[in-house]
Length: 638
Ligand code: 7RM
Image 1: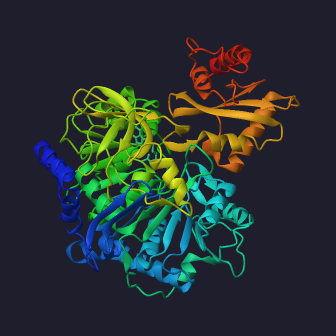
Image 2: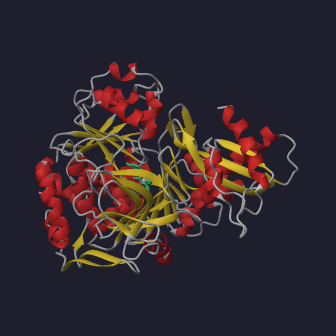
Image 3: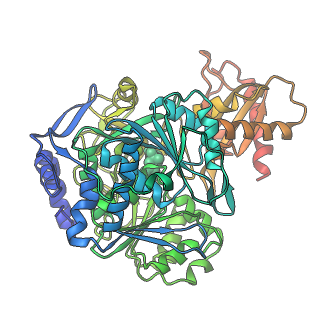
């Protein structure tokens, strides 16, 4: 059994050991899994290139650890509960045995369609059970999955398919989400018109059953392909360091990059962190509300829970459909013990009134989790009081797509709780704060840039097809450290509080977005000459998107223009990237070398124009007054 920490003392001991002897610590954890061949070296690393390898020479298949390993001991236990968007529709359950069978059948479909070890398979699917099954089916045969959130546009999907040269796309016909019905297959068709030459097959899962166009020779129905497929499938032998999946994430520059995670380390760390952070016990029912299109869904709906033999829920719907009691209804219905969601959902539900949770029995909750963005004190308190009834610990879990698993967090009720503080690093994680010059800031009650100075098993290995970018973005800012892009405080007791991104990445409803990415999209409008996008405080989303736009002077109807910009952004990226505010300006404050002064723009967008610092050295200080005035008008009509 993987180490399960049950007290503060035990945590302290484990943490100490993990720093003194990281290899010994992780070798012990890894030994609790099923390996086809044992590793010969636990860790080999240097951060310069970077080159990090865990469990070197080890052979395994992660799905044998998620599924086969449990068949004897818990074959009839429910592994996965799928809860539909429409509460009047029946939910589905898969025992470990059933899930094993479904994964094998799906894997045999992949094989029959020419998918081999190392091939990339793209998923563009709503939250249906077939998504989880398909992802595991890839892992079964060593294909690399690349899940693209189904809210992204055809353009964004095409970019990701091309970057990873995927051989197959797996999608659904339509996606019922809330009161909407989204034509998923049609988006895939549009994407594939954009020179996605690597795609040989499109597998379509029949979801809503509405009619879709099927291209002969390319498009196939999943249910037809599954007919007569064998219920077993040999698990491919994978090296510890073979890629398991690619997941695209936004950075401060350029297009989203494909973060690559590998089999061995990711397996060990997601399971270890899941068990400890959520204090999962046999028989518990765990629910994470994330979408599998994001890392949280990968690590803490699929892999972490299944590796740990847990019962994991995946839900298709949204928090407010059919009403704001939906989450709590599901918690009551399935007697949820651990519940994991995002601050933006908490704020949205909080805004609907305190009575919603009171209609449901939430007494089974043992741990509440939050992830994705800093949680404000008001939302934390509401979560603690109204959902946890003042007695359920909250784990505020800080981590990233790149870290693969939770890095800084409480573990059930083991640590003291402090609103807005993620808390302490998990065993094996060595965070530190540094100055902009790369000087480590020691001691407590300090603030700085958050880095990690020692490798951990589930860390990013490379960015797909561009290793140099990985080095440059994460390992070049500070010597021998992984730079997170976040700023943080360490309080007088050593607890970490994440302040937020210090780069040009914004966090909108827990979705990571590069300001440059949004700017590029805005600039696609024919009347836009230049734009600058910043985040600004938003009461529900955490951060909203504020776009300053210089036009060519030909815009007659500003409101029509704004609508067109939103349409362009929706087409380029997806609706989640739509600016909340668009301000037309005649110029943008720039330095003499022509760099946009985002600091000033951020401040203005936040409604704070009190102290903009010295603007006299700007190339165009006169523009600041105009920008301030326009922002005041725009922000006053909230
Ligand atoms: C898991 C995930 C990563 C960024 C990260 C932070 C922010 C995530 C927290 C948080 C404060 C938290 N991956 N972030 N968790 N900020 N407290 N508990 O969200 O790659 O999509 O985003 O999200 O800025 O760098 S992610």
